[in-house]
Image (cartoon, rainbow, N blue to C red; front, top):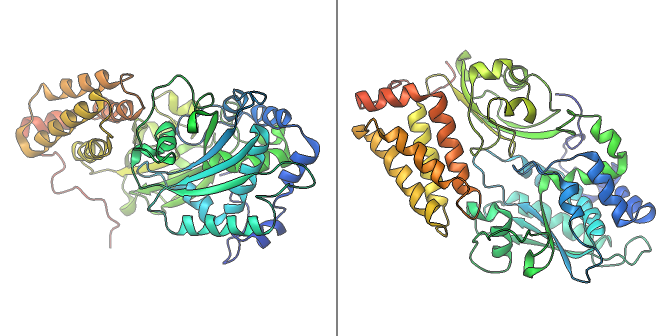
Length: 431
């Protein structure tokens, strides 16, 4: 799996504490940044590292930071997106539970670079242990003087608040998150203007994913060139992958992009229970297009390779689908989720996903029509680019991706009123 930049320490009952983090060299990166670098130099170093956002969009973190005008005289805000509501994605929880001080130190560095006085961590309301760990770590950091006071003899002061959301999927979208943080309904906002121009309380705001921010301390400590030496040219650094579904060793893994996809699935994660074949994999959260088992055999695990088959690493939430699984019923589960989680603000999303859900329900109930498949594709296309946030697009990606690669299963289901895989719907380990 290669280098370890985040999971590079032994987990013990106290490894999440301030004392253990300091023993591993913690909070030296913020001291270096404040003592040796200007805010602009910090941003330049992050840009030079090439780190891309780990929340799904894969946008350059440094480019996002560089948009903020440090001399505009306005308050600037920083927010860590710890909502992590994408099904199958649970890798940020590992950081919140096991390396909370790494996130806090990295946020201090980001706050210094962006001249932020008040920072926030927006955490999913259902997260219990992650919330207790990050809140406990913040108390330790305040007591040690890292927050709320001038730091290391400079005039830099930052306060940070951990805010618990109510668990709506759309609040993981950056602008919906900020609306929720302001105490409003978690509706996404039209853009432009970008959030880095008009975000929280209409002020410039940077929203970064937890894993993205947690890499910042390492980039400042080791330098951009060292960071770029890992991974691939277009996907530098490492990635946390949460893997679940039909897999023998589910969990969170740190991988170096560029390795063989098949080796990760079979050698690292133990393959599919019962020795079955991989039928398909959703590689980066359910918003990324499905990859077939045959494609997995010839791909490397990085954005560049996955892009050749129309997919990507997305949020790092990988779901393995073993042979014998009915893809029609799988799409039904996905569309039920999207329909339920639509905030209802945009007509194409609110109505479109309702129609998609009703069509797939009718197919599964045995009343499918040959024209249903074309209708699902049309609704996906109508949603694409016509909603305020990307949720409508995401539902379409999932639908079109599955229909493109498993259309024969849908045609069989419609023609016979039942699944080709009836009686063989589950993939369990043999006993």
